[in-house]
Image (cartoon, rainbow, N blue to C red):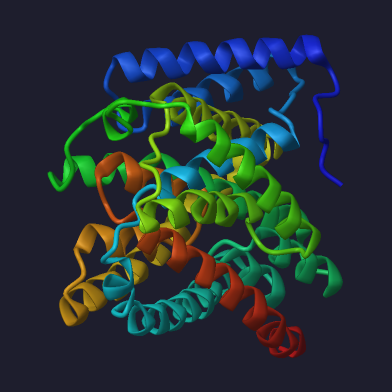
Amino acid sequence: MPNLWPKNWRLFGQFLAISIGFASIFEWLAIPLGALMGPILGAGLLAYFKNDREGPGHYAQGGAILVVGLALGAQVTPDFIERALHWPGSMAILIVTMCIILWVVGWLNRWLFRLDAISAHMSASPGNLSVALTLTDHYQGQLPQVAVFQSLRLTLLTILVPIALHQLGGLPSTSAISSISGPVNLSWIAVFLAGALIAFGLDRFKVPTPSLIAGALAAGIPSAMGWIEVQIPSTLFLGAMMIFGWKIGIDTIRQGLTVVSRALGPAILSTAVAVCIAVIGAWGVSTVLDIPLIDTVLAFMPGAFQVMPVLALEQGADGLYVTTHHLIRVIAMGSLMPIFAVYWART
């Protein structure tokens, strides 16, 4: 069971301060997703030098995800249904692409890094860390190897995707502050509380990412009906990104620098292959269904469910399209991986 509150409040305060400091510096330097990138570095360094760590806590993480969900729901417009009619074909191609990644990168891990079948393919899993670790443990695979590969893939995707998109010239370098702009009224507080209640209900039914879905519903329904215009305060959105970065930073260090350094090369190679396959699938969907390439690329990334919608919001992409596809990826892979694992366990 996750820690609902910090165990060591003094250590929590230190990690909070360093995360705020690095987020502020990176935002001031106009680094893409600076409020996310800064805490990854700051919290990671603090965890390494103190040889201890303290995360933001379960409720803080849930609140951060809820804020992103609210920002996504605020994007809902009356033409949402018309746009969504193009998505089923895109989702089908997404599932096929993720299966190709799971098999091809898994074979690569077996061939180059001499991993057993279960560990190789679970290391190649496009996200779904909990399912990958559960199956690895069940079939007696190399649990530390899978955990390190998955943690490094999340970190690599989080850091490199925004930088790569910016360097390719497809995206402007803007702060998240400019993405959540406009006059802010207090209606967001009522929407936030409604989203929190929905999230608690969805969590009881074990729905994946309940806070993200709850936020999208709480803000999306009144926005679509024209009842209110939901505006999320920029500071709140920056705080959510900071919490994501803080968590990613300490999770990476948790694996141990020696283990991480040894696995970094293989993780970079397998992640690069996975991203190339994902981009090919995204390009195909963009070409055939006439969906903007930036939307499909972010939607087809093999992991970083919580980060890609944030990046979509920051860069003006269709956050609802991106979020829906990542949710479908999680559900589809969570259903298919146990079936594939039966075969891999026999090889």
